[in-house]
Structure formats: C-alpha cells, structure tokens
Image (cartoon, rainbow, N blue to C red; front, side):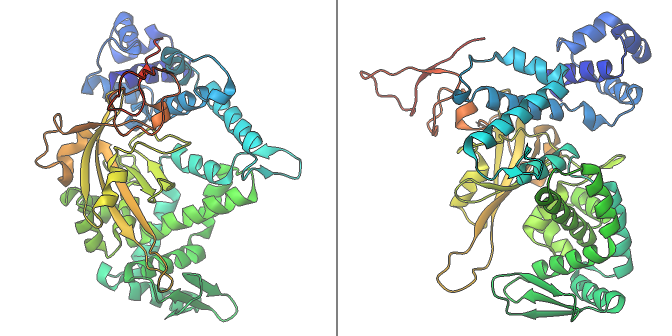
Length: 465
C-alpha cells in the first residue's frame, strides 16, 4: 500500500470519528508523534499496525486503500485543469489536501463541474419536471457502482439461492436454467432468428426468444438474466431504492446493471468462483472454461469478489472499443480512470487490438509510481448480417503488483524492469519523453523551437508548484 495514500486516509477517517491524534494513538498503542508522522506520510505502516487501525476504526482493510481519495484526486485534477474554466493552475498539493481532508467538498466541486459541462455542451443532459439539470444517467450509474466497489451482498445472497435451486454442473447449466424457467414460471425458451435484438420476452405467450446468433455462453447469461428478473426483483429494487437515482433513465440503467450482476452470480456462485480463481491463479481463459462462460463474463465476475472476510484480489475491469470509448468499467483495485477524454495509448488496453484473441500482459506504472499488473484480450461479437463489421472490444483487468504472485500472468516477469510508464490521459500526463502523446498537457506551457525537431510530438516546460 502506498504511503502517499495511507496517511491522508488515516487522517480523514480519524477526523470523521471526532478522534484526536492522542486518542487514536492511545488505542493503537503508539505515540501521538508517531501517528502524526504516519498522517503526514513520513512513516510507513506495518501490517500489524494496519490491522489494528482497521479494528480500531471498525472498517474493512479495503477502506484504508485510499482508492476513494485517489478517484477524487483524478477527478479534481481533470476538472481544475480544464482550460475553459480560465483559472490559474491549482497546485498538486492543494488537490491532494482537498481530496484527503474534505472529500465531501471535493465531490461537490466535481458535481458542479459536471453540471457546468452539461450546461456548456448541452449534450445528453436530462431536465426534470422541476427544471433542475442533473448528472448524465450513464455517469450517475457508473458512480453508483464505483462507490460500492461493485459488490452487493443482498444480490449475492439472492443469486446463491437461485443457483442452489438449479443444482447443475456448469456444462449442464443452460439446460437447468431453461428447466427452472419452464417449471417455476411457465416459460418456454426458444432459440430463433431475431431482427435487431438478442433477447425478447413476451409476457402474453410466456415465451423467451434468444437470438440464434449468440454463442452458448451468452444464451445462458440471457436465461440467467430472465430468472433474476423473476426471482431477484425484490432484492434488486431494494438496492436500487437505496441509490435514490435522480431520473427514470438512471434508475433503469442501474436496474439493468444489478440484474446483470445477479445473472453473473447465478452462473458463477461466489464461493466456488473465488476458490477456482485462487486455485487457477486467475488464469481467466481457464476459469471461463471451468464455468462455461465467456472471457468477458469471467473477468466481470472477478471484479465483484469483495465480500468482507472472503475477499478476492482487488481487480479493475474495463471494456473499450477500437476508438478508445469506454463502455464498461469497475475499479475494486482503485485504478484512477479519467472521467472525460481518452486514456493512454501506451496502455495494454489499446495495444491489445494489435493481436486479436491473444492475452497481452503489461506492468503499467502511473506517474505517481503506483504500478499495476494488467492483462487484456480482444472479444468479438457476431455480426448481424453479411458485410457488417463484427463489433470488437478489448476487455482488460489489472491489480496492484503487490498481488502479482497470485496471478498467473505475472509468472516470469521482472516486475521492475517490465514497467511501462503510462498516464491517465494525454491532457493529464506530464511525462515529457512520451512519443505516443496525442495532446499537450493542460498544466504546462508548450516549449516550441523551430530550430529543433523533437522525437516527442509536444515539448513543454514543467510548471512547478
């Protein structure tokens, strides 16, 4: 765990509980001066002390990871660097201080920035009957899943009950799902040609039609989704109610996401899946074959294994298209995704397109020194008809290099020498030697010289402070 993250996190958690440094130090059995050094990132925290902190503050160890502050820092840096705001550059130290000591204020700043972007661009903004402008539905839904580390205990419980009732090995799960839909809900499943849709349920005839273009694992997922719609609706609606979505569109996006969550948990029950992931050291192609699911489904499920007391390796999950658009992302690993604009072209998420179907591995190092073991592979969906391009995406995952020994993709790598420097996005990255840069950084002045041709697209002067 990075000392840069743990200090401000401890300080925030202490102040939220109205504890003085002396009071917390007494509970931890250390001196107040030593705690002060920890909070100012001048002393590392041992494993024993970390456990004491978690017990004393009554929280899970994951809450000390600093992922909340990290996400806020990225958002603030991106917002405050927007040249259209016309503000002077905000020092990194002030951004760090705001995210670490005043997270509520930091989130308010980001909410204002998002509202300003919607008002400025007038693209996709939603207006309620009251006339109030709200966050874009997809962004609000994404924040909902991020804030909960993409883990929902009530849905896990509901899915476990459904999976237990099916009593089938993975190879026979599709048949078991179809039988349960027939016996418990009077529903007939058919595989047939469908024009423009992948699944269609007709409540009048009680028929669930699944497109014949879908592979076996996708057919199983759609049947599990329909079963979740019947048998986990109460649990899903309870979780949705706690989200208090600001618009019907956001509510539906979250609802569908939660039903997808249940469907994945039915096909890959928590305890067996966690055991298999550990035993197979997170070899995702082998795990997908074990559970009869697709590579993407297996990866997505891996990002949800955050049950207290039975936590898996914290992974981030991201899916992108060839244009760099992110269509899905979750970050139990605390990876600081940029909210707007593209990501780094040096990242394996983008280079994986060059070798379709093969798993690509990279040790990615961010400018702050945080390093992640990443792996990525293309996934292809069937074309609707001849001559139509097949949709291609890259699915990528990553975890801190501290977990590399638990991941098969780290075998044989010299984790230090294999590091590839990446940034969050070109506009937020201050690496001066990057030959893949698409845009100059927002926070630095360009240094243009007609007498010199540089190997890098943009030369710039670092602005300190």
